[in-house]
Image 1 (tube, one colour):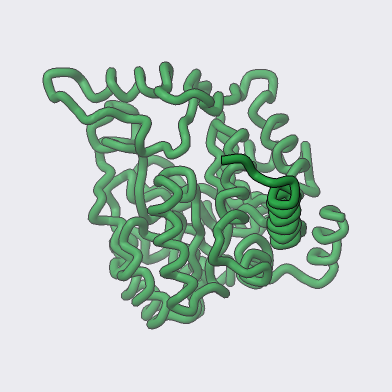
Image 2 (cartoon, one colour):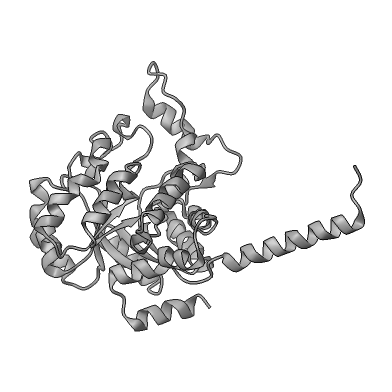
Length: 344
């Protein structure tokens, strides 16, 4: 069948209109990334999107460590995202470059001295947060208090106790929750997916990971005991979305951080999660997070996946990318104005 010239021109005009409409719906403002890391490990590995499909089904005659490492070193996709080495500050520089390109300001977790160093390298980009795990880190509540009272850290987190097999309501966490409430400092806790087969990896801090600790209900008694806590659930308890929705309804002070789940899962499956939260009425408590780790090249795709969600309005994107985190962190008007000026 041969198309007439008028039909061709009509098709081109429609394509231009659709392209213009899509461009107009794209988010152009600043982004607060609630989930950045200042890592010090050198990992020569690459990342496929979606990450969960990068790993094979496990033939248990082989060591899972070997299969996992092979999947990361020889990624089974056409355009893997390479890791950036911390050597010569390559990871820091690549993270800053990705942030500048997409107008990102990031809450940066890691060891105290390392997050301070990154902040000093790009003070307009990083808001340091204090990473913490019981059993791995030796800090006492008094140690954490002393660090937080320096004013160098905007939050306590990532609390990665799930990798140590420790639930949010474990009694060992009680003094830390109380401290965060007393100091009125926000807390970010990992609850949700780790890498595929985490518990079977021989890496330090991996074998104690348990999926059952993703259950958002494990946070409920903590919130009841400490009602003035500001808590962000990193990874939103994925994939337990219904449980997380119940918690958001029961506890209006609770927020969630997307935390890399947009590139962990296939896009259609992640969109089901995101749409469910929005349709349930919680668009004002969803915060963007890239979880860039060793792969700063994932920041752009992490933003695009949210920006391209066909069911989000421009206003909902602005809330997820910036407004909700600004409210959660209690940024002042001067800080908010400066961030918007950076994005112009």
